[in-house]
Length: 236
Ligand code: APR
Image (cartoon, rainbow, N blue to C red; front, side):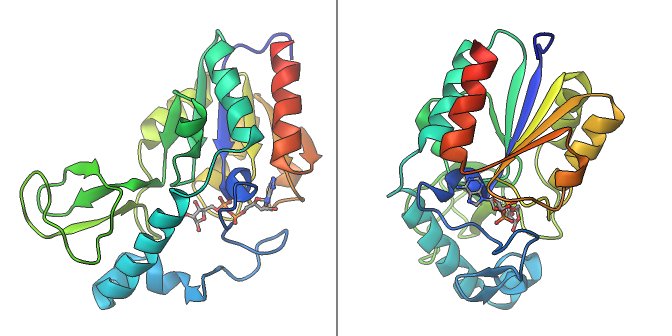
């Protein structure tokens, strides 16, 4: 660990679980993906949105409202401390669409699956801040079209900023995965990329994930305990 200079950290729903935000999959190897009793195809695909926009907008409105009542937990704060104090390159690639990394103070954060707190206009392609709801179809603050949608990457859509992520993976010395089931690609494939490049890999998760076999080391437990402990080791 003493030779580590550049770090890529992948986070998933597990890091926000102790803040009271639901994860997506039940059980270690990902049981059926049921979100608040909805099928994923209904609320997290472009086809589902075209079929029933009201259902989808209401679903994300509820989740957007919910995250604003939650607070970062010790795992978010520990990563923010690492971000502030780590002299080498560091990138927190999160699959989460909440803003708890930022609210804990982290700066080097990349939201590969989008964000609840921005809306994306499908007319002018501009993203704008959003805290309220979309169900009333508010006008886009830029072009005034009533074509705002959640700025969340759905199944069948390309995650954001993949070039930046792969560039960081190529030059990192340590890849750490925190609180993700390893069920959804391309994020689930990052550990394999890292291993093939000879990069050290560490997983911190509540239970064994679909990718656990690939990591050099897996530590099992709640993120609020494991992440602060690991950050302390890194900064020692
Ligand atoms: N501490 C650490 N890990 C935890 C905790 C905790 N307190 N609670 C749960 N976990 C682990 C679970 O054991 C599980 O392996 O977090 C993981 C959460 O997995 P998922 O619910 O599948 O979430 P994630 O991996 O982030 O999902 C990836 O799938 O549906 C899409 O776009 C969505 O970004 C999401 C992507």
